[in-house]
Length: 436
Image (cartoon, rainbow, N blue to C red; front, side, top):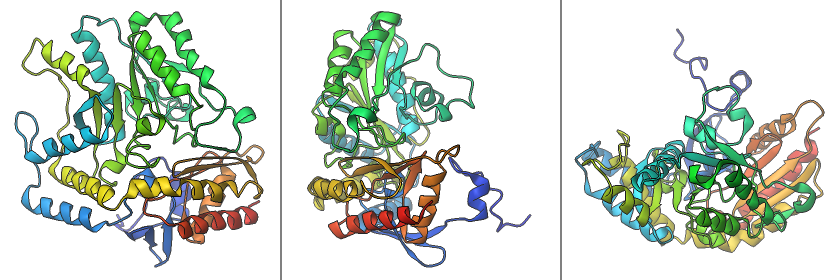
């Protein structure tokens, strides 16, 4: 067997045959840039996969990882511990909105979602309402790839190959309404009434059967769909009235993507649980987690009939190297004002990408925080093909972008400058003009 072949690696969420015929390889990274295998500088327009918020190879994070790997390579967290996750949990509790001050660590966004769903079930069972075991997701929602996540998720392609889902899950309508909300900045103006779809499902299933509703404050992987103005507030009110926990999946929106620590802060709506991952370690070492309201933790712990209050966890929960990376990432975000930089650049970001309204093939543009979704008209009978060609052409010109269907999604490191924004927008315009 040839050890240098590309064939043995089964790549995730990738057209394997297409990639291996014409690979796009990176070999190093620093700041805003990857270095390709052929030595070119490639600007990272996607923060890796929505995660390298502090830029690549940040010295604080690199040093923390190296030091910890040499001093404490692993520590079990079942009945033992090490000091740093307790310190990290305190810092995260200070970032998240009150009363979300109890932190459970996982290793990815997918694990964080499954953890949040299990915590919701444990909470209702602890208060004598075990019949509240149904979950409500949303069409076009993405909540990772565990069976819990794909069950509450609403992206059809992520579900249709797999027949087994959690029982009893239902979905609210998605909020995408291009006829009323095209070419928007921030929360879109129309559609708050779509939150009332939760009322329909309460009527259909009974509030006494529903444990939680989970949404992304800004739907990311489906193509950058900001919420309608007032939508999240309305969801909060309905969930509270019917004794349903509200979960915000902030795996993408957390840690500065909207110029705030959380989307909850950005929109002024506090859920009962927040899932996080990606930016918590700047993507350097896998880590995820759940921030839970204190009343949820207290209910589960104080009503437990066994010494172990929650029968859930992972071998690598609060791994020492991941914990060190997270503490260093939070320090970098704070000391270098990265969230503030993102907030300061939101206007320039929106100006640059909405300036592409007249570019070839552009059907819609949506921006919020430092996220942009540039939707392209699809080719007849070949949905997604045009965006893939744009991605390949952008790579050839020194820009890495992410595509989902025919939507270009941009979410750069928060250390970018206005000139970086200009390069991204100019490159996209050039590439779109060259694409059939």
